[in-house]
Length: 208
Image (tube, rainbow, N blue to C red):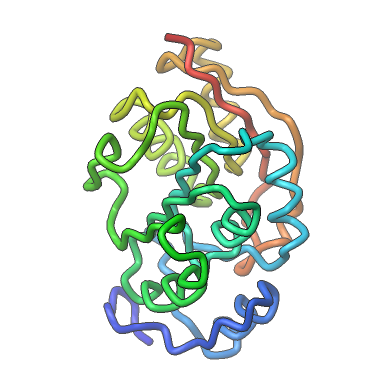
């Protein structure tokens, strides 16, 4: 596949996160560096992130950059509602296939999250749960956008490059009206392609 093509990624989703990510790699999938693109390889890592997120039992989750649906599927398996947003149209079919069995509680949007009406699809108290792009500036921009565009997202848990957290902390804890706090780490090897720098699992709270 060539970069920026909008054809479906013809990769069977087996329900095994490791197999799905590795199949993309073996097929020579052209990762989009402009999106900071990467794929979670371990279901165990997805479940660990869910534990850190401490989601309310009946809550709704927004995932930005849902990719192959590994994290989205883990959320939906708990019975919670998930809205999975993915920009890369090549992955649309794979993501929809991965979440189809969850019916109406799993919503998929193939679009840039900055072009989506989040207020229309979220309920108050929704939680952002996402593995943000490995480009730290893009990670920061998307995180700010979600919280600035809708008051319905009150908190979040994101995986981000270390430099994004460093920049927020250097700007002061109230940068952008958000408080970011590192709660865990995650191995770069949990992703394909492997992350180019250290990653942090970060909780986000809205201050106002």
